[in-house]
Image (cartoon, rainbow, N blue to C red):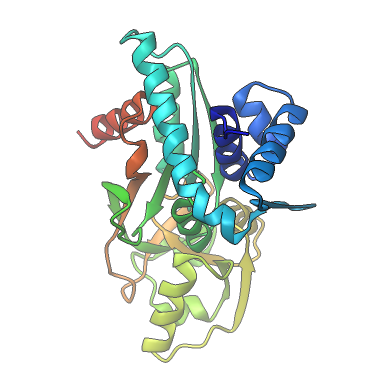
Length: 290
């Protein structure tokens, strides 16, 4: 039995989306159809390509060998479909976007949604390590990530630069000071993102370099949760400046020991660069920089 294009696309989208139900939704077919395509693919190859579990799917060694080609084929198939439809305005499409902080990703998504209302978008926050892993595994279209790891397979376009600052409530004593030394920050309850984040690595190094030990450390899953904790009076946090929309009850205070500049970039797997939906988003990135 020859391998069909439907089998290859179904396999690629199951891995991209992390589940059979997600692939079915993206392809506009039933879950049973996707499952049948995967079963037929495995029967033709004589080997299992996916391991199905309650937490989603995982690739077998055979599946890992096949996925890169299947993903490139699915992207090429999408480019052919776009070419056949002509060069009219994007009347449909889908983008999977991830980021390691809400901003500037959300502002870019808002601009893009205004210009391309018929393109659907899935957006998720991940810690830095998980975001890079999803990029390397080709399970995302675009990542808006700070200081991405360089790779020959990734296209990287800078968006903005920022430094780490201390986030505190407006009624906190820190808000009245132009700068706050790292030692003073560490003397308070310090809120940081969970391990795996760029922030954890940067702040941990700065603390070690300056011989500072936090009095109490609290880790949380993401910046939005950190922000809520700071507003509730749990403590103060360290994060990149302008990581969220302006909050009247929250302020940013410079920390002299954290003066390094970090660049946030739009990152795309290179084999997806030919897609019109990707090009259109990168145009929005370019306009935002201008």
